[in-house]
Length: 291
Image (cartoon, rainbow, N blue to C red):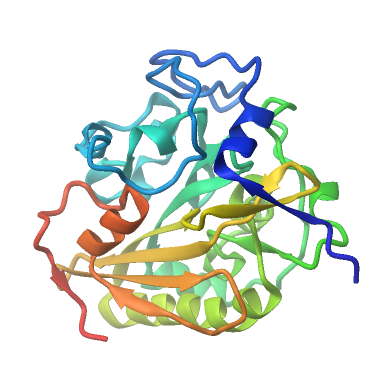
């Protein structure tokens, strides 16, 4: 199989994709015609990456974007994850049946996806037969939209952030195959390591009745691969889980490789590493679920 990827530096990525981009200040995104959400017009000098010492203001609690109001039930206390300013540039909030997405026009992947899982939802999802129907997200502008052709003959799987196995209806199952919910993932990580994490999350939901889940990607290495000179390959995937009945949380953190490595870390550690505060309405010292 031919692997069509390119190694590029952070600066090279932005010089290639940032020229001519317009950042819209304070705009909301209507589900039918999404527009980038950004609070700055500064063209970044590095790709979206983890938090820096001077990049903390964007991590405070904030209300839902207008475009996410119709899927507010997917968020703990109707409060969306917060990100550093770098990660927030050129993002597109999108509502789907059963989950919400913050899509990046820079990486052409989701930055995070939010779900509210319940025991009833997981039970209903087991009755559905998987029907693969990967499709491009036409609500996104063509210039930032990932394409089916981006993934062909690359050696990478189209990895779901909100997994198909979490979906309780045919509509939500179809939505889970939108490329706005997809990021490049190594085959072993997608089919082995990550499946175990997704299964463990559903098991926790069944055990305790309900879970809020935020799944995301991180770009933490000095050089980043890019599929077809377009879609950035994450260095890591994470899944943050909060159990309301237990007032406890945990985050799974795994490199996007075939090592099978998974770390179980606190939400505060996840925020320090990735620049994403998965559940900003929780206190910083929320108890961590015992592994």
